[in-house]
Image 1 (spheres, helix red, strand yellow):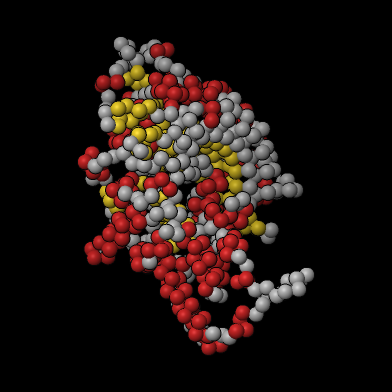
Image 2 (cartoon, rainbow, N blue to C red):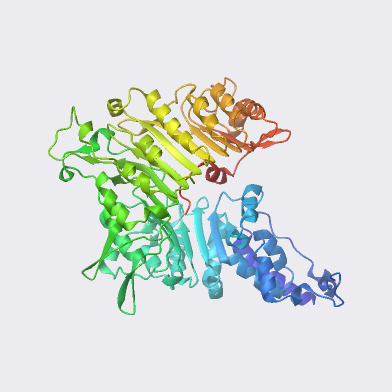
Length: 623
């Protein structure tokens, strides 16, 4: 018996060293296998049953159900028991693989999120966080073909440190392994690659994704295209670009350099052929397109150049919506209608008011529950007109104002909208009739051209906050930022003093609040917290969010401990203000880059959970 256990344990460890103990940097434990005996398989007695029953007597379906409810390391534990549970456990461990260097098994927030999910098995995953385990995982999968058939979901959130700034031989091994990896996953239904290492541009052939073994099984694709070798720009032209991703439900692509390139990608992922007929996928649930990388903060062009006399005199790409509306296949134009779409995200794009009819045609706006317009620039075209005095009267109705009456079921909204000589976001919010809006992430923008519509920055902010308070009955998450535009990018701007404490108390159902404002006064925040009884997450950003400069901290160097010690008194002050309510629910506070968890006896600093915390306070990138 001990020989059987020894062989099984050795098999498990070879698998374990490859990928599974990705969170464990300690050396493996040396077991004395001779101490094992048949006693380790003692039967389990159940009260009320006359017969004895052992765990391996259960049907495989029941054991698989049990394994699907376990986290990574718990599943490993049951795999050490017997061959049957090893086979059951390995199927669960490989069904979802996540590359994330920030993951820690000791951060209970992620585990609580998994266990509270109605479909826990969909979130239980194997996490890989070190470079050595990443390489071992790729090698192990390439040597064991049966493991590739187990992988259903693959996500790369953040690559391990030092993955690609390597010597050429190792870099070549990683590159070749990744190129063959994606084309050999027959049951893959979700592919997410969000991280791009600074030393790893274009390491994966785009054709690897086009040559996935079973395209009809893929339901979700979200990839940062700067990671993929887009000689696909030429490669797409030289190959048949019509693929059969006809069962896609979620699609997110970024960055998109121009609308012509976007049109080719839409042709690849939305159209296909079956039995000689050309089809267009009309069952997408979510669609995301970003022109620039997510972290890009450059504003181009300046707001003064967003009003044109003719579209022919600009180099701005104004055809994004047009590229999403149709495809050309074999000389035949096929119109696209995303009739089941409920999540639309556009980022760093240029839109014009004339896009409304086409957008209304391709998307059933009444079905949208989630809308993200992130750093969108609206371009106004004034035909045969002169830009100067009287220009404002010639502006066409804004695109978002035209959209608002049709967004009847909107629940989540992220709006960062640039305009020249006008700001129609307050009007959009007043026309938005959805009674279900529960999450709002909004940016208040200011440039000098808006003086033609608003007398001051304070008047604009007051109008924004008044319109936001219209959703006081349903709003549970609010993120509000203040930005001022200049020729080089965004600058932080301060909300007028006393304005937040006037309007925010109306939002009594707020669970999460994020404020990004320069030189925020602690007194304003204190008075606001004292009247928000349901608040659990507080996030304050901006140069003054962590208090005044301290003479003792961060003088020689900027250290994490110094940051915590500097803001700790301010966090305690906010906590005291929130506890003006006997049933205060405040759980987490972040000031600048320092995050604290509220406990019964006070507060304690936390690190490694910023990504999770961002999900609680922000809206966006949730595909």
